[in-house]
Image 1 (tube, one colour):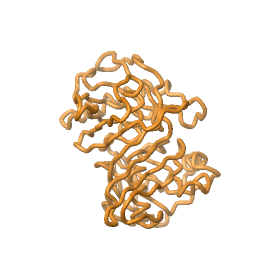
Image 2 (cartoon, rainbow, N blue to C red; image 1 turned 120 degrees about the horizontal axis):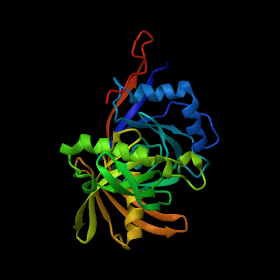
Image 3 (cartoon, rainbow, N blue to C red; image 1 turned 60 degrees about the vertical axis):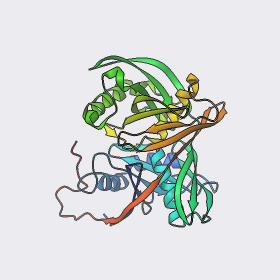
Image 4 (cartoon, helix red, strand yellow; image 1 turned 90 degrees about the horizontal axis):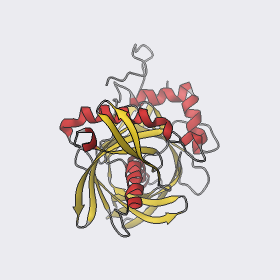
Length: 328
């Protein structure tokens, strides 16, 4: 395997590893996602970068690929330890920052610049704000988000709970942490991961995309605390458990969109209101509904990403652990 160079960011504490050197065939981003999943040589790069000893069980990253057409600045295939996701909000924020900071998308030193990105679930726009030549924040507009089902019962090791299912580029089950006897706090981290993983797999088959089966399947469980309000705006804290037991350190960007769809549907997020969405590590995304469409609400999720380093990874053919391992 050739050496692989990466640029690493974090968005609100969640890692994001950007790779530009992997050629993935396909006529569109969704097609390229399928190709990456089925290619042993391409997927070996993902495993190399996400597994220990070069990554860890909660690592996240992407392959930058061509967009679906000339309307996009580029496309992206998101990945984690278990495969390839359909959406990633924290990654979109990091990619918008990276595109402007590297000059891939020219931007004024002061003001906002749109970075158009094709992701597996559709086209998203990251509006990158700069001041004095430095990126100060990113707000991305997601694909339409919508409610799938309410109060879906699920039997768990902590008793029967009910979950609300919604889509924000990926499907999520929202469950109050208090309903499983927990709160979203670091001291309950292991228990939150265990029950979130349990709920995700119990409800995986109920998440069926109406037009594209490649987007079907429950991606994660959002365990949340209601913290009241901030200046009349809803305030919540969550831990999102996605894939097979991965825990999002950020408030989860696509998960925030899924939460916004639910809150809007409940009448708890009115015009002009902003969801203050905190993570388990104390970072925050701001979320709002900016438009209602027949396909769902258009959401905007705002946060910031920061470069943490660059690296070139290699695989010694004599290395007995090969592309690595996951220790959970």
